[in-house]
Image (cartoon, rainbow, N blue to C red):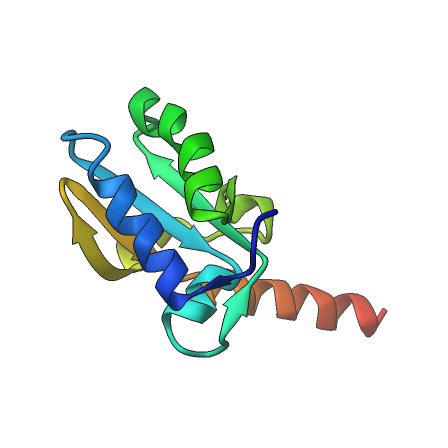
Length: 125
């Protein structure tokens, strides 16, 4: 059975993933994993990631790492959660690198502001 993901477990996932390939790759964390890595909360159920560019070796390694580390990993994009502003990638916060993989925390504050404004306008109708 897989366990909740705390900071240590997420960082072990990053280290193991970094050993899997030598191609320049960016991995963006979205959702609860970002809050855990920023010490905003202690754990999350899933580690949501986006791999750019898509990388077959990493995609094949993830199921094995999920089992070895007993961690839930979901391939998802920030756009799956909220509308994202153009250029969100360049505003994402660098977390660290493992091997040739650079890890980022997605920064969607502008997209979140727009979503909140949309809800406010909807509620005033």
